[in-house]
Image (cartoon, rainbow, N blue to C red; front, side, top):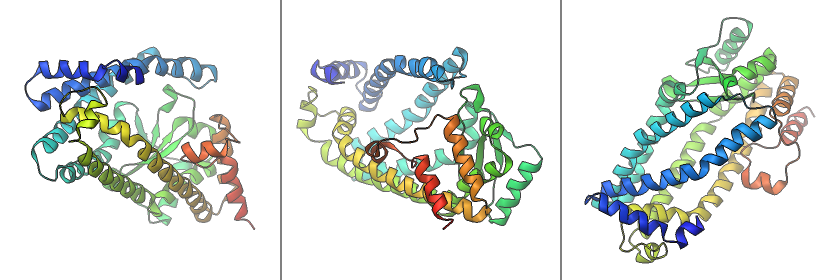
Length: 340
């Protein structure tokens, strides 16, 4: 990136964009599109190495070349379909509307909520097959628990994650009528019924304790701050001169702003991760209290950590900077502490 800036890469791409069209929005799409393509090609070797060398070395990888190529194609297609109208809308606001930063923030918030709503039924099934959990002891136990907690589910689904990785996971996705619990097939194979119930109770705890809403509000608030700061910098010629671009093309300013926003973004990320770690402790506690089964939560965490080769003793600074979940030993200690 540093070499790209010093060698005038942005100026060259800006020249291509301006020669491609006389319309600012189309220029912006060309400019940002070329940058995304360069970034994608630069990152592709690392992605391939991560998947087919590192993940393979430790026994995680189940992704075939065919699956990898399909995933890449679908991701690019989604990026074009979703990204093009969003970028066009942002450029329109900042090029034509007073208080553009407020309009842009409002539009992006609504779009994000809409995507979160449709993702479980439109986007995620493009990559994985979601099959309703079959009838039996497990499904009955999970549904009885949800009913006891007055937690309305749109469904409990088995995800065919094993076609890409051996890692275990479960997650909550969607809201309203698309709210669902997704359980990796790898998790269903390795954990017993009580352990899976503890995992589901943990996910229900996130919802019941309003963690999803709190995380969403934090993101919406930080986006408001980001767009306000963006509005202050877009017209500053020094911003563009620093990247050797003449004039003040708005589309270039959008990109350049994120270089100087990165330090603040990192600080906000640290705060967000600290809140997330706190939420994980609370969800663990919710699971233990509502299932009445402390030991299943502990053994479930142990199995997840063993099968995912989790780091038992990460450096505290790395946890502080990067971890959205507390290290498993700290989670187990917190659960055990509740016994006293």
